Image 1 (cartoon, rainbow, N blue to C red):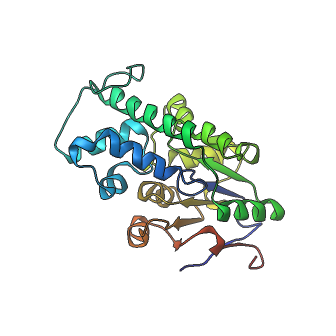
Image 2: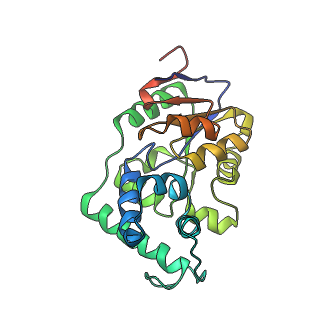
Length: 238
């Protein structure tokens, strides 16, 4: 177990990843990717190394490269299928949306507790996610009203910036909130997201270990790793 402290007046904003930090949608993504690449013997390790925290098309490229495979890039407008990187990514998205609509999603209780503590302390929060489905997930989980700034896969594409593990999405969110990186704090559960936080010059990068990935998160650059968000205090050890 670890402990992490958010200090009002020192940390002006908390930048949350979504899947696996605020909501258990990382597991839905994992199942969807597993179905997409079942014929390639897709494993949990593949998900953590090549997919977790990345945008869908980046994830497709990374996984295919791990198997020595290449595919035409295609276009984001490609229908779901197998003919291109974009078609595969869109098929994965269709699988994810089907599962989200069928099963719904509830936020982690420890995440709600931390958001409540931040609000009480007057520390704003934002969401930074590679997923183009971040806003539908936030709405489904009842979290949308709690975040003014959301930088997701749609924003990343519209702005033409690199996705995680590049720090650009986190830096954009901080900038939109009027906060410099050295006064912003990142909370992530993915190696790629932790690497992005470490590369961005943020005040603190907290890794959340929900899948026995403590060593990997520390190796990726986390300043501290917690088992869940109950271990994160806000001011005066709360």
